Amino acid sequence: MPPGQRRQREVEDEDMDEDERPRQRRNRNVSDDEAEEDSEDDTSSHQHADDQLAKKLVRYAIACEYSRTPIRRDGIKERVLGNQGRSFKRIFARAQEQLRSVWGMELRELPVREKMSLQERRQAMKSNSQPKIGSGAYILSSTLPDAYRAAEILGPSKIPSAEDEATYVAFYTMIVSLVWLNGGELSEQKLKRYLTRLNADQNVSTERTDATLKKMERQGYVIRKAERPPVGQDGEQVVSWHVGPRAKEEIGLDGVMGMAKEVYGEWNEDLEKKIRSSLGIRSRSGNGGDGEEEEEEEVTQAGG
Image (cartoon, one colour):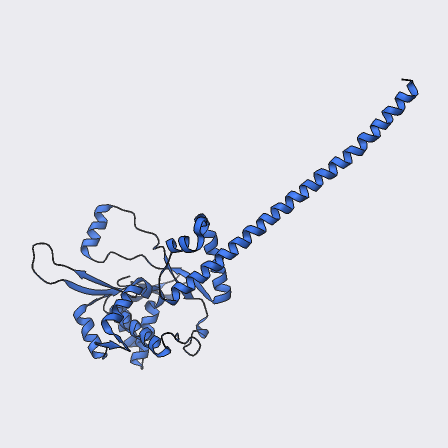
C-alpha cells in the first residue's frame, strides 16, 4: 500500500476510535443512572411495604384494645408480619409514629407479672433463671394532653351501651383502688365485705358480679391468687386479689388518687398523707445541690 493511502487509513482509524470512546462513556453513564433509579425504586418499594405493615399493625392494635385483649409480640408476628418477623422493631417504630401523630395513642409494654406467693419466689430462686426484662405484651395508652382527657370529651364506648361501659370502668377502678389501698393484696373475705357495702355483691349493672370479676381477671385488671395449705396440713385454700398488669398501666397510682378524691369530695392535707401512706408513697425532704430544700417522692407500688 502506498505511503499516502497508509497514512489516510491510520487517520480514519484514529477518528473511529475517538468516536467509540465518547459512546462508551455515554453508555456507562446511562447504566449508572439506571442503577440509581433501580435503587431508588427498591427503596421506595420497601418504604411502601413498611408503611402498609405499620398500618396493619395499627389496625390490629386497635382491634385488640377494643376488646381489652393484650397485644402480644407473638400475635403481631403471626397476624401482621408473617414471614417478615425480623422486621419487628422497624415496623413497630413506624406504627408508633402513626399512632402518636394520627390517633393520639401509643403502645406501652405491660409490666412483668411478679412472683407473689412464697412458693413462687422460692422456685424462682432455685431455678436461678434471669428475670424477664419485658412482658412481650402491650396495650394502647393515650398521649393526649390532660386538657383533652375530660369525661366530656372522652366518653365511654357505646357498646354494649354507654351506661354499661361507664359502670364497668367505675367498678374495676374502684376494685383496683381498694386492692392498692390495702397494700396491694386484698383477701376474698374483705373483698366480699366491700362489695356488700357497694351493693354490688350480686350484680354489676346487668351482669353477675362473679362474671364481672372473672372478666376483670381475664383482661388483666386484677389477679386472683388461690394458695392451698402445705402438703400434710389441713385447712382451706386462701384466696387473695392483687393488682393486675393492665391496671398498673391504665389506672396507676394517679388513678387511685383521683378515685379517692372523687369519693371523699372534701380533700385536705391530712387525708392526702393517709392515702399516700396506704399507697406506699413517701415524701422525704433533702437538700439539693443549690442549698434549697427539695421534695423527692419515693414510690413503692404495693403488688407492683
